[in-house]
Length: 130
Image 1 (tube, one colour):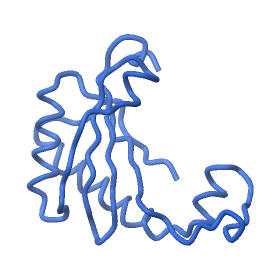
Image 2 (cartoon, one colour):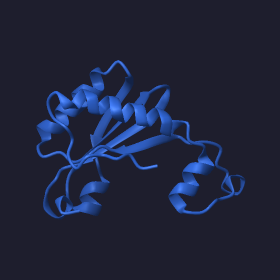
Image 3 (cartoon, one colour):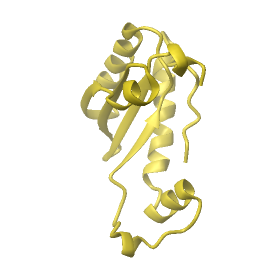
Image 4 (tube, one colour):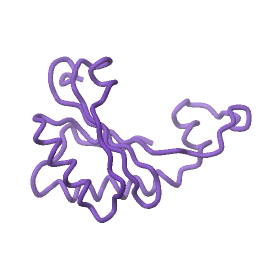
């Protein structure tokens, strides 16, 4: 399952509606069974017992690029104050600079009793052309 993220994180009044959309999609995605998730990701069924997979730990969502660090800061503040999220943690992405040549951030939180991870990258350089 891939969330249909816009190219850029919404700003202003659109942010709250967008977060609600992400959380609604996440609630459905969190109910996905491990075999369905892996089959969708790998393109063929796998034997969960052989791989010793018993469940999904978290759902990750790419939420769109940001233009300025302040845009990410506003997004983080919204996630932190949302009544639908708790235990919000954040940090710099180590993958985005190494793999895509741009800074990025991750946000981990709990929503609907499940682990959710949100990712975003700064729209610049070669990454912006992807």
